[in-house]
Length: 297
Image (cartoon, rainbow, N blue to C red; front, side):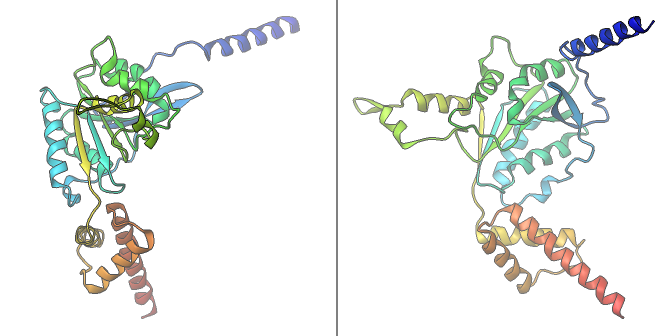
């Protein structure tokens, strides 16, 4: 019996190793209850992991980007209505609300049929698998690629090009790709590449390397650019978050404004993210002082 036991143990071990290489049938979460997922990989296998604590930011929380909000909101409403809509590339300065806008629109339209799947750059090669998984679902999906950029030798952008507009198969009508990036063309550009340009009369024709880099961003039908905030816009954002996080209990006086500007100066940025971080520090510190003051009475 001991010999048979060893044979069975070896057979079970072999089966376990074989199973790890067999394709696994992917399953969708319950989209009636789940509005956002991340594409995750574990043990070489990808799956949709529901986001248990989604970001609750609202469109009304976003300041100084009204034009950008209108453009992306209109495109998203077209998408939900089953009308023609574009993939969207949101570019510009960091901390200006690019990814926050996408999350806010998800919160705005999630009670309808809008759903979101966040995909990391490292997993873009699995886009065909993701698209096949959700293309037959009765929901509209935004595939969200945040802070997207590629190195000079990074080939991952080819998977994104195919998913956008380069495959023999037509992309499902219930899927759009929304990506954010600090780079307009998603790839680094070098001065030497300008030497590849040729001239025909007064016309300038870009070299192959430049054309390759431009071709990716051109596959996004809608480009939305975000400029850095002015000082007044930054103060407005910081003031809004101080009032919001304090539930209206704290007034924004000259002292708060002065501290918010000092906070931005120390960090070398007047972004919305910096303004939000200032507000959390300001409100948290004042609440803590109030608690200590009440205890000493």
